[in-house]
Image 1: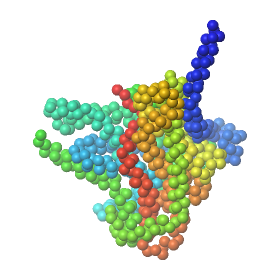
Image 2: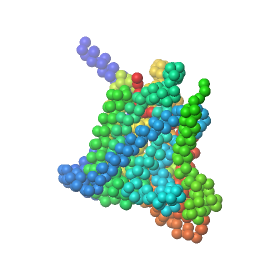
Image 3: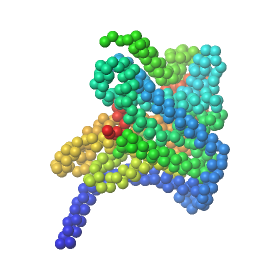
Image 4: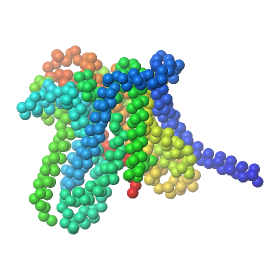
Length: 311
Length: 292
């Protein structure tokens, strides 16, 4: 009896395995690639604890030195500077990256002409699709103190030329402004979609109750997009250490390291230019761990407060 | 209903504000375009705003005449030709099994977490660089294509879309004896055509715009894809790559007009596919789902 049950069970398992086999096979290529190109580098983070000699190979017989790489990089003046710059730049980018798209979406939502609305959308989404290489090139030209369009305008209005990308007083502001410029249109999409989802009867009811447009915006539109605003705010938490490598790398220069050097550019120079693999990996590990904490917390909060599920 | 005076004033101001914003977004691109077609002296004098002055095509002739430019362009085309299909195949092959219920595919949760975890944590720059070096992939096209071959974010988008497909379709096919492969490629994929189009556009833009990997995974500038080539010419302003020694002889162009022409050539593909991308990308923004 028991034997028979076992046989039935094993037959069942076999059938099940046979049915699931194609699913496993479909996963396999992607799984292998992710293991090699995502998980092996994670294992490679052990370099942070070694006196790494490249010729011995990534997982070669390296000398372990404990936390020496960490104490070394944390004592470098460039590190704390980069950390502070990163948080500062990221904070303002997050703040304006949330506010500007909401205001823009509200303004766009008030438009009556559909064609005009569509045209504005088409234009403001465009910069999002350009890379920072292209935009960096464009801004280098436009913001140049000698002959750039912006400085021509400033001098024409009677001001003095400003070296936006080479002056520590202006560099961070320029980074924040150009980042908001690139992303605000695209960032507004989620809010516009949420506004379209608001029941028009609510507006009609408000109008009957004598609410003017301003009151309708305040009491109908804003509560209607409240959830998505909360969600975007919470999710943006994960970016506290992302000041935007692509942008900074393509716009900064030696003269603005003081205010413009961020963790990612610091790691790049330390690791790939100075070939100090151990210390650079230590900084990278520090950033990865802190970022992971923030991203996890942000997903958890999003799940808790907005019932957000990724999969 | 009659509009109040305040309302009319608001609407006028609103239109003005939005027009200004549009101009602010468009101006830098138009300015570059105008300068690329202008004479170098007019550009240097700051006379060019939205329209070319002393219209000419010399800067473009110059760019097109450089073999470095064509080499880089070829590399970018190669990258897209391999990277884009690879991204799409892997996305579909992963999204289909992962969209199944746990009761149908028991290992699902484990697999999902293996992939999802790479969105939370990564080895970062240095180990990633050393891996490519250790695998002897430097200067090959595979260094540009394989590390980002599995776009996990896209897989999750696709997975959520697959979940919206009615179960009845799948069950009917299963009763008719269709294999999982057939269900995936003959039922799910045709249903998901708009999503697949969206992800293809995103994958294209991604490959076209990627410049950093080309920069660090190439020992020789001759292996740069166009975006990395542009980075050195336009941002680092490394004129040796352009070998501009003969440009002095031509009065109509300067390094500035050549740079503008380079930038514009680099974004032509993006501008060409932009109308299609715009149609689809609203879907691309919303990963995950908000319930309640």
